[in-house]
Length: 121
Image (cartoon, rainbow, N blue to C red; front, top):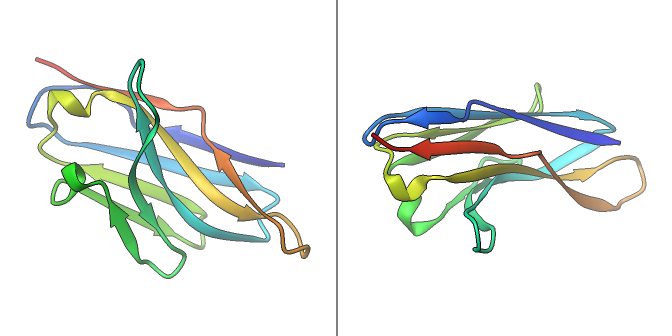
């Protein structure tokens, strides 16, 4: 069993900053990619940022330059630092991790429960 627990969401004024964190626990033989998706009502979940175990990163075009993803492979955490927040960044942000739970080479995507980010004055 694998759990992902997010923290750090909230209400922020436009132009402000926020840091989201996610901690993985449970059966963690190995963790591959980790990252963040976001979703607004009526829309599909979209990838915001992803980081491989080796540190390679991928960002949504609108997130480049404002979002920074990082991870700690010892603590099994992933974080998303967001600057210059815009109202259109308002969404529920979900953490994910691609996990191998045992010596059996099966990889499964796990998700956090989501954390609300609201950008409004």
